[in-house]
Length: 127
Image 1 (cartoon, one colour):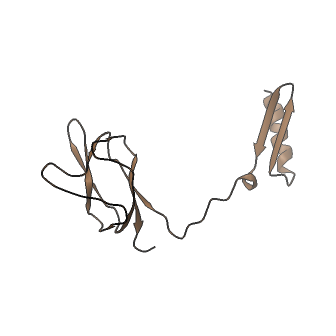
Image 2 (image 1 turned 135 degrees about the horizontal axis):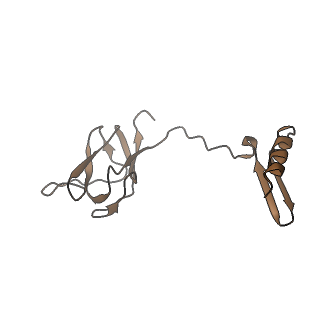
């Protein structure tokens, strides 16, 4: 692909009111979209707060001997225990970062989780 041609096409596109452009020649294709061509993200009155896995490991709803029953729709307070992620050397406690309603539970007891994987989604009280 000819980089000079790409530069010429993008420079030309800036001088027009086009939001999208496709140029094809000799089996090569250049497709350019401006910000105006991108769809507008949906606007929500409230956003959910994701609670993510703090490490790679196995999720448990509670430490041995404890019983935590989490259900979607239940009200929880900030700091409430949501379980632990057990690694080879440590147990990482998971707590609610905000008070609100537990909207989505994406993890099951004994599931292997990766760092950053969303485990829960909480709808904050102020919504």
